[in-house]
Length: 156
Image (cartoon, rainbow, N blue to C red; front, side):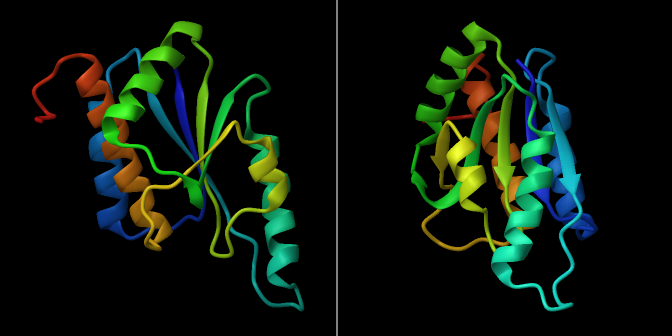
């Protein structure tokens, strides 16, 4: 089951890139994790935050494979435990559909992206830097797969 992380933002600090890469390379072959970075829209030139989100939404939606399961990261989304994520991933593995996680830009996600999502998911009730969300999500996906595979990385 292929996992894709679509993230608005590029040119992340080295520590974010290396943190993300560390967990993505640990993922087993049956759960490959790929990052697709989308360049954020330029702020300014008279564009409102809403216009920026609409423009970013067009690129996000175009990047989602047709039959993919989509989870959009949103502060108002469901708050799953790691064990719940592992259970969901076990179920998803059966149907084999590609699963896409979306991290929006600085202004968040346009309602059209949230509407396309099968699930809104929050990592924390706190606001986190979007680059850090990549690292945390990659670690949680690795941890969930470790739980599924009875690997000792996760301990209760």
